[in-house]
Length: 578
Image (cartoon, rainbow, N blue to C red; front, side):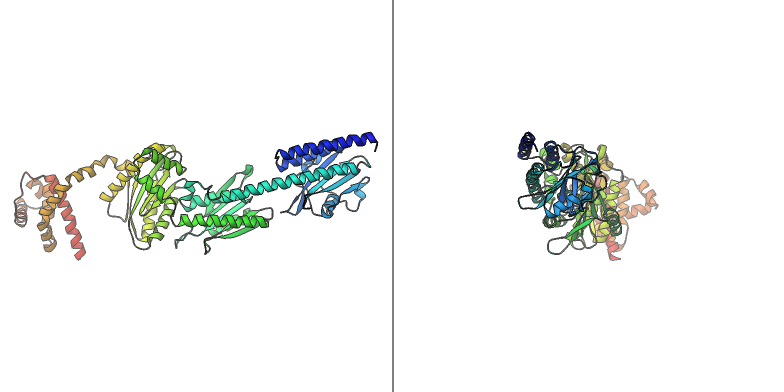
């Protein structure tokens, strides 16, 4: 090579290395470093084509990542070589550079590669890329249409650029590993508050986040709740185009297995048990690339963190403090802050649930109730449980709740009541259009709850909707105001109540009809379908038992309510005796 040409090549070499060093100091991504390295080598060596193969440890293949400005770019990310396969594969296997300056297709190491038309090339240079620990990182392959195109100077450029590129790739990999480790260590901290209140939201967030942290294509979470009869749904997260993910869940094991067979066929699998001590489930990840030892270590660490959270959620220890604060706060600002802490945005409808009694283990029953309410209220609902109180914050899109929501909540709670021997009351509040109105809506839910406890007592589980009973709510206050007079009247009626219970008579009922008719003898006799004289005889007997005459100026409303209560007691005692 003429001295002038050699000097020009040396200048190019120095310029290439200088530019690449600048790129390394700028912290460019591996992809940017690779693209720029190919461009610089092509410019410095004046070759027809420069290919960069990078070693994929998971697939154990050399993968064509960059192909310069040539038609062979269509094979990028698709052409894969085994170690020893072709001239580039041989250079990688032996970690020795190769220069073939004429008829490369006749070399015994040559293997034709689909999508690369090598007939036009007469010289080939292949230089392995290795880091400081001699770990293979890839191969530079240079092609020229000229014969005798490559010598020691071109080789030196390829080797030195390769060494710098390997250093950059190793540093980028270290940074990426540190970022993954940092993200893994903050796994639990990343959980939104709303995803730590019940199992389903927790599993949904965990599946999507694990997909990212483990670079998986599919993540499957199966977790068994501590309650005897049930399990949370089997949760799937699938990687979608654009780096997003799609969630899907099912309670049917057969459907879950069918999805795995269809979506994960041919993929590598990594699984680890979930649970503190005894196993309570399985975390499985699937992807096309092989899982390395570091991936399994990270999977185990993440599974341990997730197990802690799921155990806490399952034992109902998360969210109770927020429920208590929200239920008792008298400050609109604090209530709005709690709603924000729960990550709730938009219109919501609060539903209060109060459990009065349970036949068996309250811990198991409460977990069953919480999971059932979460399913009934929908995926966007937040369910909080504090002692024997439950609070459901249901989504109300457009400022309205679904017409069937109250019916679903009632049916679900009655089903749990039948299984667990549970007695409960439910109050559905008004819709809060913003966090600033949540306290008023909670007040409405409490008023509906008080109504159903006062006036709906025939079923184990009763429910009242504020919007349906709000016009009648003053009745509770009115009855409350009448309570002292009502109690006094009940005490005066006690002898008559005892007489009916013992004798099987209907004197309390007779007095109740009289009070309801405002003291009218004629109307009372008509309603009882008896003669007026018969009625007068009964009234005389009532006055004898009570020891006082019936005053025409008596408060007939109070007497009517008192006799209704007394008649209910008579019926109850007779039924008990039977």
